Image 1: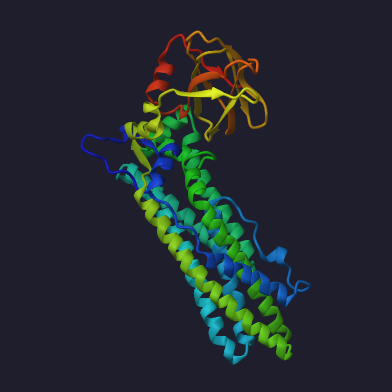
Image 2 (image 1 turned 180 degrees about the vertical axis):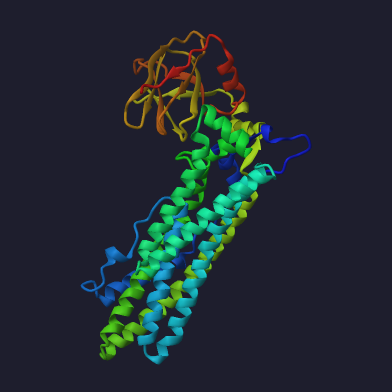
Length: 449
């Protein structure tokens, strides 16, 4: 993600970190292509070939494949890991294989390395971006030199730990466990900048020169419901399928290697191995092509999307069309009432509502997905009075806003005018919700703890 270019007179004090709402709108201009049908077909073909080879008594699939995580960075590590496993096992298989299979196995090795390089390229790109943000905000003096020196020293220490692990016979699985542990420590160190308070926080700002907006960025960027969660929701599913594909390629090369190590001269089995190698080669060709395409796309998206925006830009993204949202009139079904689902995706979100009963009394309540009632029930008379409110401290998840009218079946259906919105409490909201917040007589209804 790019640091937003500052216009004349714009300073760090006028900037705020990006929000999920901002990125949600931003990503609408960057739709991602679905993986082609041949991607799924190749994976199923490799899966079928593994079953045909049927060496599960010797090949433990549970130890070879990885559980699919939902974290983008961890998926990147897992794809790198599986690519290394494929290249390593294909190298051993190549030494054992008949001459006519060696060229195919060489290509498989090259494709695995090519795919590995794609995922590593994105992770290096992301790390350089974050370090660039720190450099951009820190004063260009001895303080920046000290912080960069400490960072380089820590990276040297991390590299040495990996080398020590491998020199002591550590496995690829152990190496990637260590990689993730180190990455987690990097994230924790960044987040720790913003968790200090009082005198210590003042010292961080004054001695290191960290402005408040950088501390806000450190707190939000990798939080559970922070802006990067939008990246995962929008572009993660494509990557999860790549991880599943890499798992299957690793399984197939392990099955091939086992049979070659058995040195079985059975002609039928040799023909099956030749087919399996050809299928793995075709699968890795598709995988390498699609992984490069995905990484190129992700680098382009993150290059163009900012880390920081002005408060006005953040407000615009949050309010979106809500500033123009008018009351919608609907009829309330007599049997089940009228229900509207709404999503709360941040702990700092505020749910705003306004409604009025048009021709008959209505009862209103808000229920969490668990069934817990977090607001109401409240009865509104058809007297033209507008009922409005704000809900704070909601747990992330789905909520049902339900209006019901206890009229007889021979009566006309009740009518309702309403509007709903979810806004970030740290950013100014759209027009109607802003006015809602300003009214001195407005009581803020807090959800049950």
